[in-house]
Image (cartoon, rainbow, N blue to C red; front, top):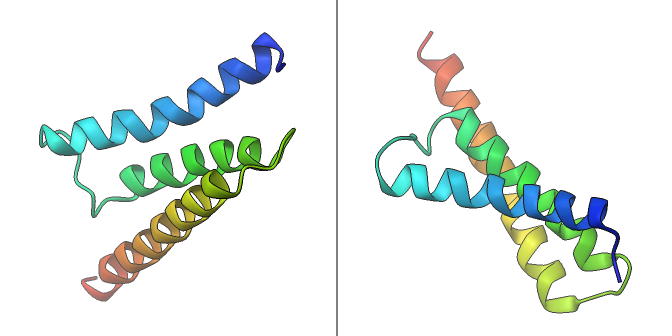
Length: 86
C-alpha cells in the first residue's frame, strides 16, 4: 500500500491532466499552447512512474507513455510554429 504522500502525488498527476482537459473542453485553455501540453506531459509522467512502481501494470504503462509522447510531440510542434511566425 502506498503512503499518503505517494497517493497525493498520484492525485496531483491526475489533476494536472484533468484540469487541462476540462479547461480545453470549456474553451478556457488552448491545446496549442505550451501550458496545456506541459500539464498533460507532467501529469502523465507522474502517473506513468506509478504504473511501473511499485507493481508493474502494463496497460497503464502503455497509456501513460503514449500520453507523454503525444504531449511532447504537441509541445515541440507548438514551439516550432511559434518560432516560425516570429
